[in-house]
Amino acid sequence: MSEPIPPAPPISKWNLLKDGYYSFRANPPKYLPADYPDLTSKTALITGTNTGIGFEVMKLLYSKNCNIIAVVRSAEKGEAAKKEAIEKYPNSKGSISVVGGNDFLDLTTVKPASEEIKLVLGDKPLNIIIHNAGLMAPVNTGTSKQGLEAMFSTNVLGPQLLQHFLDPLFLKKDDDLKRIVWVSSGAHANACFDYGIHWDDPTYEKCTIAERPSPYELYGQSKAANIYQAKAWATKNKEIVDEIGCVSVSCYPGNLKTDLQRGWNPILKRIFNYILWDSIYGAYSELYSALSPDLTVKDQGAYIFPFGEVHAPREDIEAGLKNGTDLRLWDLVEDKIQEFF
View (cartoon, rainbow, N blue to C red):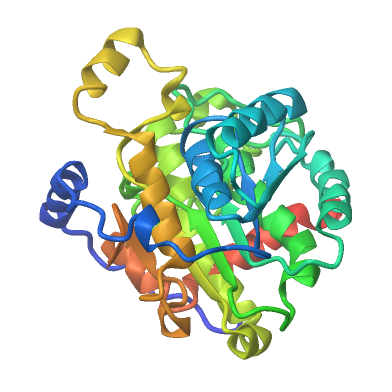
């Protein structure tokens, strides 16, 4: 970067506590399926549709006659989810196409998946991209095939690499609906206090596993990065983004019961089941981000809070969206993924 980034501002513990409490007592969703437009002839690409929020998002969009490209690791599980969605909404005029084999823990799989996406899309406009797939590991030992910390690879590197291949398909003036949703989390508050990123080695390639921080901090770092990606992508592509009226936002779906907790301690899972929301509420957050007319190009990089509100992220992350830290993160990730272009 041409100019140095100023030191990160102080972080209010009171604000962290307040936001943490509010996330469990968020306002009810106001933008619901009855408010969604008819999506006939529109196409949405969603990652991680087999279970959880992504599955709920796929069903709701399909119910509105949307064409879905479901990008997943397991084609078999993707087809099973597709079958369930079609059975629930037999009158939909939309379609669901499953693209399997996309594994963000092996970045070599992303390009072949993108080539299949291009074939499936054909000459149809690509209207909505939801980077929903994610990993929230209960341990800090996960490592990708490329030797990178697992949550950063899955939640940050993978989506940005996939977006690299989607840009030529998406950045076209071919429809009036253009949205990207980068799914983040309130857990970004657990990231380190230097703009949320361990800048020297965010993928923890240069240290032993024993030297890694807690899984909570690792997950928090990846979710802070997602907030930056939403703004940086729009800035990097500002001219065409403004021309086509695209809106790129990050979204905290909510504190939810999903497969993200599949590796948790059973006792902890039982406790949290009493205070977490059902995954459908996460879909309401993501689809507010993807469809609500409240959001315009003036909201580039906005952080969407449960269950459909614009909110400020942690103070240093908010500052980073304004002082170029987001672009620093984007460029850092580009350096990591360019060998897979």
